[in-house]
Length: 311
Image (cartoon, one colour):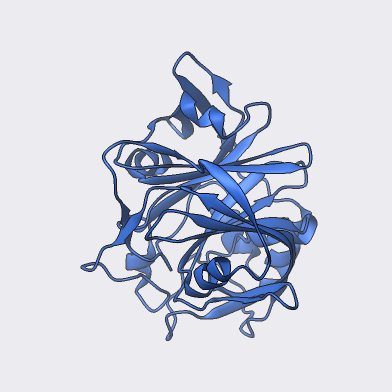
């Protein structure tokens, strides 16, 4: 697999944060993507077709997919039923994640339909660190593809306000300049998402990450996004659509070579997202309900880099 190709928006944010050396090192590192895909109990995929960004989820007991890696080339076989929710005439981008084990990887490629499966030969595949995930596991004994349907929400809908205010697990859907979707995890303590229905604004803090700035660089270049906020107890989700701007606010701008840094606080600030919300929807049965894993603690930047590192 060729090195990850950063576009101008990602490079711009990296230069502001002085993380270009760290990003360059990570551009050639794939990591255990196939292993993490086979162990994922939640997979979120997105595809831009025309003016519409489609989003679908596969959840349930592992393994949900069959993934293999030949050297660093990753191929993921997804049940064909997902095509009921996700069109196959555009590239797919997504995330494979198991929050209970704090394992996640990002993937993208152009789907190929087979008899019972859809193969995704990955042109993009890389593994993220273990930070900021609320440890949860999927319920259910059979795989589920969602959402079953969408309900348009008023921007001051009480259920939506409650879900966003208490949200700890969210997925940020952005796109590259050539229209390929990217799905990244956003997590934190309840209240990290700050939504004002009167002003139609959404904001959250971007915590210290790995220095690649893939999603935030996409926002610099394209601006449009969707944020999927899970309601763990039901598996329903809020979808917020709009435009967003990312600002680097971290004062420490020494040249960054290492992808992982240990901080003296759990959620060190890297930047801020300021967004304008245009529409919202309730994604019914987006995934199977999820339960908290009490015996596991959330990994943060306060943990050692050995703990933060994929393992």
